[in-house]
Each structure stands twice: as structure tokens, then as C-alpha cells.
Length: 275
Ligand SMILES: NC(=O)c1ccc[n+]([C@@H]2O[C@H](COP(=O)([O-])OP(=O)(O)OC[C@H]3O[C@@H](n4cnc5c(N)ncnc54)[C@H](O)[C@@H]3O)[C@@H](O)[C@H]2O)c1
Image (cartoon, rainbow, N blue to C red; front, side, top):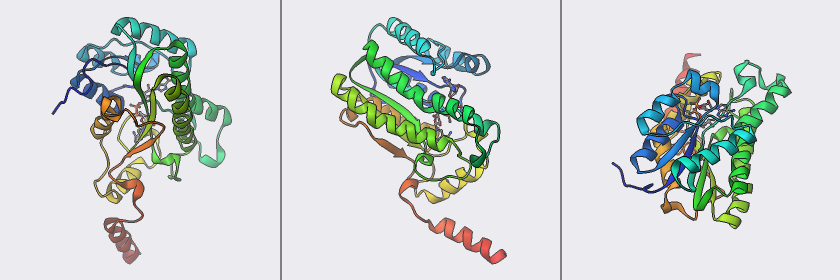
């Protein structure tokens, strides 16, 4: 069902790589709700992924940008405002990459050069996207900027590694920048904390299947799918959430409030019996 929630709104969506990407689902949903937008991704991902295919399907121009490059972001904003015919109402930051995770480096043997690149790509890029948008004055009043996070920002999750620090910084940037952007332009800034989801990025996390199954069994409503996450992002881009800002908002089936579920207790009990 669609509700025309984004009719007349213009956006920029970062991070749609292929059909499994959360940004892909957000783009499809934003299109269905009446928005027009540009799609952006780092050039290598556009080459090996399917961003162009999505652009053709949704009639959205694809503009390459490395989200760590100030020049690329400036160019993306100039091109997007021109292409869409006016200022921007929403931005999705759906960008994450851990070099240490990719190289299989354990958390107690991190390479710090790689860690600083991870933080630049996965967290500081969010600050750059916000700071440049504010300086170039490309957002309409009551605009909305959302970045995707994970509960590993606040809890230790085996295998999540340095991404815990990246997500903690990402969530903190939403709180800090939300103050400045709210005051100056009435733009809201939030992070959405999503359940484990099978995508290209998550395929690099060691033991991801276990993380997925554990939280699915713990959450009373089960894991949030990419589509569920997209639905939630659409509400945050819409005018129905105008006074929601500087928050980290969970779309996780209730996982973040749980301690122990009956299902997991029974599974654990059976494991103990069989030992
Ligand atoms: N998949 C999960 O379990 C999960 C859970 C919670 C939050 N998230 C977050 O959701 C977001 C999207 O990830 P996804 O799971 O859809 O995976 P994905 O691999 O589909 O998306 C990650 C995107 O980041 C892009 N990217 C990497 N480096 C970039 C750069 N320098 N500049 C611009 N773009 C760059 C990639 O090209 C890719 O499109 C990430 O922030 C991720 O941490 C994912």
C-alpha cells in the first residue's frame, strides 16, 4: 500500500549496490511514495554493482561520489539540485565498510591505518555530507537526513569489530549535527538502528548467520527486514515526523529492549543437556 507520503519531495540516496542493499529498498519505497531523487555510490561499486539498473528502473540519475571526498560531495549536490529542479528534502546515508573486517583482522590486533579509513568511510562521511549540505544550503526547511546504524554501537557484538566504533561515532554525529542543523535550517538528523540483514556489507562479518538467527529468536517481532527498515526511513523523510531529531531510532522487532527470550532459553537448555 502507498500513501503519497513523499509527493513533491526531492532526495539523494547513497549506497544502493544491489537488490539486497537497504538503500535499494529505500529507493524503491521512496519512488512508490512519490519522491524524485538521485542515486549515488562510489565509482567502483557502480561499476561492479547494479546502481545503474536501479536508476533506469526508477528514472533516477546516478551520480558517482566517494563519500569521503569533499569535492565529490559538492559536485553531487550541485548536480542533484540541477537535475531535480530545486532544493533537497531528504538524504539517506547508507554507507558502511570495515577494512579490518574485510582483511579478517581480529579486534585485538587492528591495523590503525585501516581503522582510520573505516571511520572515514562509515562515520566521518556522515559529517561531511551534513556539513557540505549546510554550507551549500541545499536542504529545504524541515528536511530530513537519516543514516543507518546497528546496535553494535552500544553493545559488544562478537564479530562486529571496529564497526562498533564507527557506528558509535555515526550516532553521535546525528546528535551533535542535529543541534546545529535544526537551529539554523530546521533540518532534522537521525540514525536508524536496523536488525542484521543479509547484504554485501554484512557478508564480510564473521559469524553473521549466528548474529542474524540470535536476534531473530530474541526479538518478539523477529528481525526487521530491509523492506521494514525502508518503511521506517520513509516515515522519517515524511512530514509526519517533523519534530523527531537527534535520535537513534531502533527498527529491530524489539531486540534492543530484550534480556532473554523463552525461545533462546530453551535452545540454551537443550545445548546444556546434550553436553
Ligand atoms: N546489513 C546489516 O546487517 C546492517 C544492519 C544495520 C545497519 N546496516 C548499515 O546499513 C548501511 C547499508 O549497508 P547494507 O547492509 O545495505 O550493505 P551494502 O553493501 O548493500 O551497502 C553499503 C554501501 O556502502 C557503499 N560505500 C562503501 N564505501 C563508500 C564510499 N567511500 N563512498 C560512498 N559509498 C560507499 C557501498 O558501495 C555500498 O553501496 C550501512 O551503513 C550498514 O552498516 C547494515
